[in-house]
Image 1 (tube, rainbow, N blue to C red):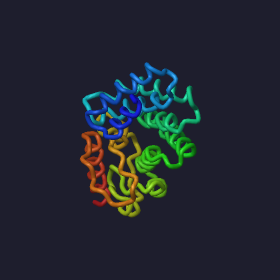
Image 2: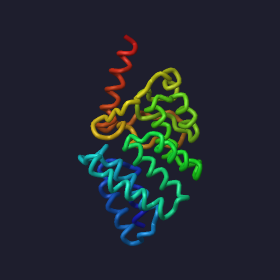
Image 3: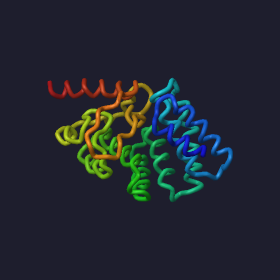
Image 4: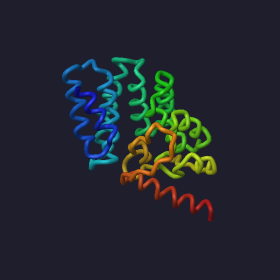
Length: 212
């Protein structure tokens, strides 16, 4: 199945994102009304710049079109709202992105990706206290930006990325990082893509300045 193969590659991230895009586009060509494929294509396009030499500005318009198409086909599909939230987040539209993520979660409370992305968005916009229960809701043990664990997050509620930090081309350099496993066990921090590393470096500098 083209869609399932594409979903597998999308979740693995890395160089396979290019093949994931191709598989989703082929699935859409076969069935233009396949809303899940449109939503997955949007998310894949937006994740690609974090792993491959592709500019966010180049993928944002087709990603928006794919997310809009998914919503037009199935407004009750959680994946479609999650994809649109991702589009809006990469467009610096925090309030609407949050609304879309929350809509996705309401439609599918067990969906890991919108929970993860909403939690990261809350951290980025300086609302770490709100992020903790969101990330814990699905047993997510850590986030891919400083502070790296929920325990650390609890002690750094003054930590904020608000103000449009880009990390080199994406909005905040963390939403493209691999999703953590759904189990609540502590995991090892994955290798961060270049954009996430840039955000992390900025965070360290900012935190050092605040301490000084």
